[in-house]
Length: 318
Image (cartoon, rainbow, N blue to C red; front, side, top):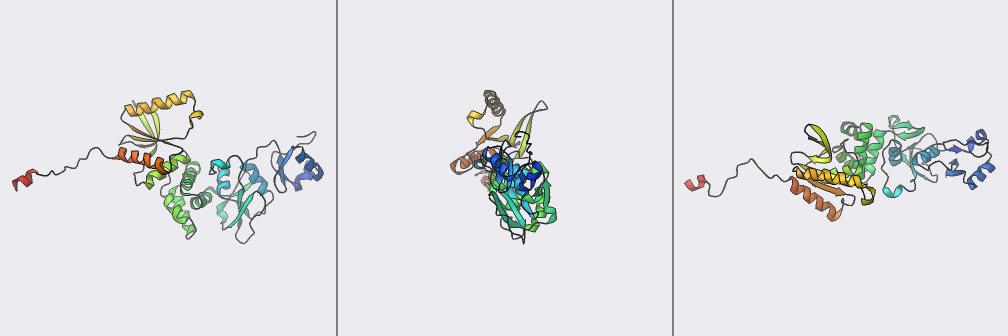
């Protein structure tokens, strides 16, 4: 608001100026005075509103034709799934759109416009924005993202939107010969909605790639019949816990540090091997280290197979 002027909570275009009682000259003044800012060409918003992916998606939707649809990571964000990298959190990345095949992609500043074949069932509306559906978005990201990020995205869509490996597998048949479809098909077989974070999905994928048995996500340990400790990933019969610790040292309160130490000490005192994985442990020697620890921990200490010794009784008698 400036004086008697009330500005909307959503982006507005030149076509809205008359209804708002603003001339183009006044609009330029409001921009200069930092009351209003331009989001994309021809679309503005109050300067006090957060510059979010949602706000920019609404801005883009206000000025592109109806046959354009928000896609991929932008669509995932609008569906409640964050697939953006850490470096992209300071400045919102371009809004990803696609024009239906046969139409020109969007070329506006702040928009990554492409073309794509979409069926009517591939499109839905979220907060007034036309976007690809959760199912279509998950499949697209399964093809387009790097492998571990794709695994995390598929797990997240399964957890948040109830997508199943069966649904994904059936729909993926449409993707025959599409770039990335081989990766997609492999990852669909590994989807688990119980993974609660992207890094947990990365851990599961690394374990799979190492040829080790799949752990059980979100396993509860009971004490006197009461669930007390929940493990990120566990091999209950081997008493092996795999924990992803994504916190930096300065991010934890003293109480959290004490609680984590006590929890892990209880596990070790009660016969559990606890393997802790941190942010930098997904490449190189750090990755090899914890996978080697896990491989050793999963090695059976006992076999019920009776081994024949040299000089067995049968051999001596013969």
